[in-house]
Image (cartoon, rainbow over all chains, first blue to last red; front, side, top):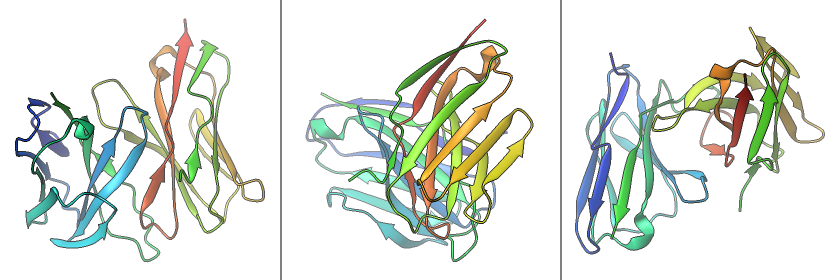
Length: 116
Length: 111
């Protein structure tokens, strides 16, 4: 009974390729996030969507484009993959975006991306 | 610019003893803090939280302490159990908006 799921779990690809990572949550949450954990184990937010609307967009290359077809899904598309994109990407969801609502985020298992 | 820091990458503790994991932050506007636990090949799972109106929050064997003047929080696990062996991340936010994570501390509880 998975709450936040990501596919694929592992992704090995060549430089220059375009790839997508999918995320789905069955918790009925309003907000979804993408995080990147780099080789230094630093977990940093990339994007946040609330009810299919982009609300956080950190300094991320334009090659990264999130797509939210509905509030239960937030997919991450990456164009022209580079070596430095190798990392673990985590999807997360929470009930609300904030504004005084301190909501816990629930994480997916991560997608390990390796760019060769 | 890392706003949340966990300066100890690893910690080893004997089973039954207390584990103390530390976290420091630089942004005085942070008012909500969480600890996450992460096993290998899994995503972080929520463990315990504390808001800035408190200085202590307890849940079973886990207690989080917040020292706002020092911009420091700590997670105490007592007694430590082998199943507690994992990576622990602290995270902080201002009004529940964007969360900033530390780099994690890998805890090993020795049977």
